[in-house]
Length: 142
Ligand code: CMP
View 1 (cartoon, rainbow, N blue to C red):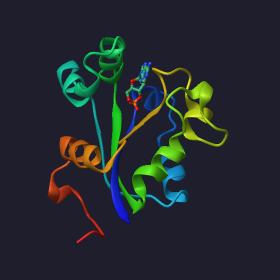
View 2: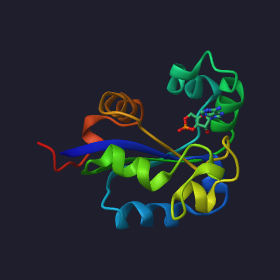
View 3: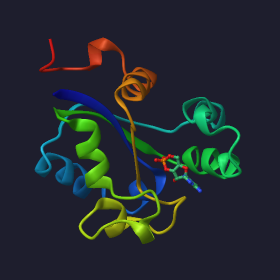
């Protein structure tokens, strides 16, 4: 099924100047960026985006990190895009991620793990809406 998912290149990825390499992984992995923008989240926006994790002990560190610098946000489209993107990213903890994945190649810790990706269809819709309006999305999905 043709799906959309949200990807975020986190502040560590932008600081390491690997935006191009990550987008190349997406393109070679069959995912088409249908919208891209750079932004810096405020702490409040980061808390809002990651509200599902609000009761986790890592919530404050996560939202501080995610608001610490520029991020690049992409809406990706492709066959089975959600799972495909998760496969390309690898496990949340880079030390447990498979060889050849983005997090294995570029991640340095569970906090600095370079990329975020939506975990399910419903989440993907909400996360894409968080950053993009319908007019931003050039889509092959009617
Ligand atoms: P991400 O996919 O952006 O979703 C939530 C983030 O919380 C996750 O990547 C990690 O960077 C971060 N995080 C920090 N500690 C943990 C943990 N113990 N389990 C899951 N995610 C964690």
